Picture 1 (cartoon, one colour):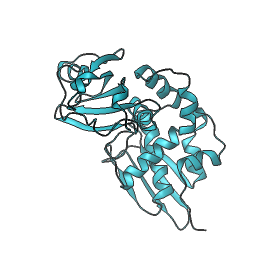
Picture 2: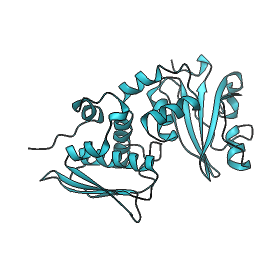
Picture 3: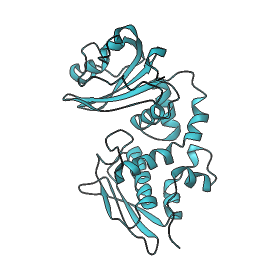
Picture 4: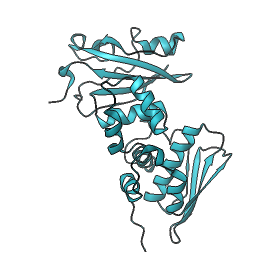
Length: 260
């Protein structure tokens, strides 16, 4: 029988899974014909080799990776097995992630989206987000724990799901690396290429400051070159992800930032 690729939501619902704690990735892989092995890998975080004609594959995950990294990597490879069956793929650190590093129409971008939707199904997010009246890093942290994913993966998923008008941005010392904004934010709000010294993200990245413990209020012209950006306020909260990278959650506090 010819394999028919399924969306992550169809996989979840076919197994009658309704709670994040019941998302057993090894079981999902096994039921899809893929066996999971954990071992030291060189040059990649995960890889998959399989035969489409017999519906069997072996997914290898780097045993040295952090637990949540392994979990996202496994979900990513399950996505490849669903949608790119028959291809032998080796996925590097930059290929796998719940951020904007691999976007567009590539196989890696598709596998990342599948992984995010498998680990954080939108119908489960909708139920869980009802327990929070605002979007900040406390919300992200508690949701990340509930779904067993990284802070960046959860923040990215919440912003793209548009529960609150917001943006997520990543900067290195060389400038902006990627960003995503909710659909409700007007496209004119395009972040600056480099960090403003007034931002907490600048202090964290360049001056060694601690991650923001709470969301602060800042003028829009700190982050955007829109002519009247100084007339709108944003909620801002930043955290370090690597020695040379900081991620910032921005939450709109003015309807003037919303798309028509």
